[in-house]
Image 1 (tube, rainbow, N blue to C red):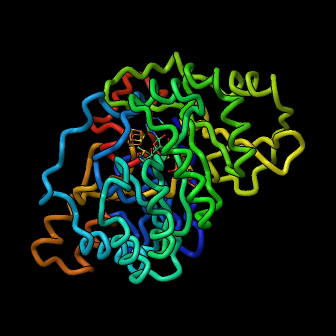
Image 2 (tube, rainbow, N blue to C red):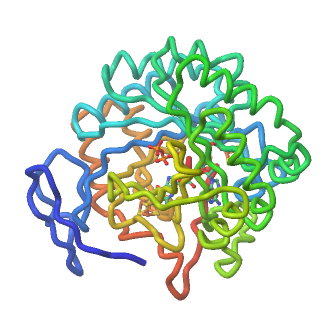
Length: 357
Ligand SMILES: Nc1nc2c(ncn2[C@@H]2O[C@H](COP(=O)(O)OP(=O)(O)OP(=O)(O)O)[C@@H](O)[C@H]2O)c(=O)[nH]1
Ligand SMILES: C[S@@+](CC[C@H](N)C(=O)[O-])C[C@H]1O[C@@H](n2cnc3c(N)ncnc32)[C@H](O)[C@@H]1O
Ligand code: SF4
Ligand code: SF4
């Protein structure tokens, strides 16, 4: 686990991690700083636990237990928290995720409400693209800036096996519709597993043909079935070997050293393929993420089950300042990193789909 000490940038006080730092040690700044000197600027909002697919690395076959409607944040509650995040807490980008955000019929209202509340802030979505074909235009009109789409294989049988649903045609149609209406740059996320390797070159060729930016992602211990095994991680070297059989790849110097994806130029460029090595070369020391779950808790790290409930305050008359203070306190306690390489590592209780990836 990386615990590199990083100074807080941009004029904020320098915060040094030290054992036993308490709430009283938090500097009086509006931003979402933590004890390790990081500042969270990237808000990921889960809006549902429901999903149209059942990816084996994420969901149980039967889906997640349904969240009763009254426990889900409403459109107005999501918009209010997004406004607080941007205007009071220094958030600069908002991503809708889940579960599958397209499962919410009021997604367009959520996007439009946020676009009006925080004009100029990029509003993005991570989606499996099932049904996006019919909603892409409406989402652009509502104010969505771009989308990232999960797609692990362009082989229909293989896709059905990985997602437990035969929906590849809908996903490809969704990606094409999103690209047509300008939800770009459109990135494709593929979780890297032994099963993904066989079709990796075909997937890259498809993305090159369609003008999408493909990133492979190391599988993390966030599957609902708890079948993840550190020793069966497929690493970048194995993937590069497979892709190298069909393409010429050259590593690209990272423009942004904090960016999680390492990039390779494909056949001389300009197209690239990326690898997000969340496990073997984690980027926790540069983490700038804060999360809201669909039930309105702040989750400071994907791997930390310590959540702070904002919904209770939202529904009992808390002021913006009170909600912001709760959010700051939650982020101050953020962990150094995920710890997947530490002895005695235990996966979190919630799986990826229940957190909001
Ligand atoms: N370790 C770690 N991995 C994450 C986190 N959030 C997302 N991921 C992984 O990164 C992959 C890509 O996430 P996206 O939702 O596309 O977001 P992103 O890469 O931040 O998006 P861009 O800003 O478009 O590059 C996901 O498939 C997850 O596997 C996080 O907070 N920590
Ligand atoms: C949980 S999904 C939610 C959004 C949407 N349903 C989708 O699939 O894009 C968000 C991202 O998490 C990734 N993901 C899910 N489980 C993962 C795991 N165990 N390890 C790494 N990434 C995972 C997915 O590939 C996807 O890119
Ligand atoms: S990764 Fe996304 S599409 Fe796949 S099961 Fe999880 S939430 Fe659904
Ligand atoms: S695992 Fe936690 S600390 Fe690491 S990048 Fe993800 S959210 Fe940030």
